[in-house]
Each structure stands twice: as structure tokens, then as C-alpha cells.
Figure 1 (cartoon, rainbow, N blue to C red):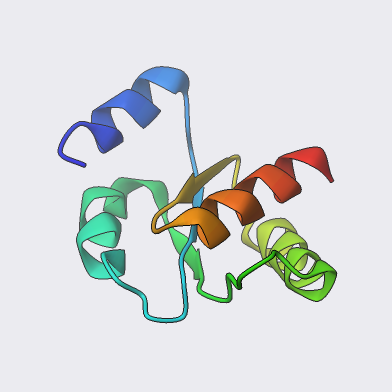
Figure 2: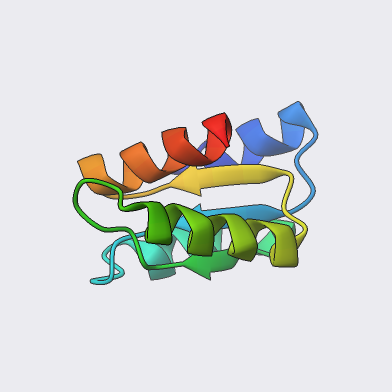
Length: 87
């Protein structure tokens, strides 16, 4: 996590959408590291990545104007990130 901000800067990231579970575990620490990237949080990740969740996350991504997605959490969050990439 300590190197995330510098790595994203190297990649040219300007704005980040953070995907998280409803528990928002690690969100505050992640937002602190990403503060230079105007992060927006989508905290609706769910088990088995329901299509409704993908649609809601996709809408959040579009509204945020993010050029990078950061997934924090377990399999549901990572699965949601993959689904967004494929959409």
C-alpha cells in the first residue's frame, strides 16, 4: 500500500475508483494513500458478482471519470474489478 500512489503516478493515473466491500475495510488507509488521485469509492461489491452490482459499479466508474480502478478486499471485490474490465 505504501508504494501504490507512486506506482500509479508512474503509470499516469489521474483519477481513481476504489472498489471495496460494504465493510469498507482498509478504505480509509487506501484513500489516504490515493488522496492525490481524487479517489471515489464504490463499496457495493457482493459475492458471485451479480450483474446488478456490475452495472452499479460501471455507472459509478463513468460518473467518477476515473481512469484507474483499485480493488481492495477479497475475491468479490477482485471479481468485480475483473467484470468491469470486461464490460
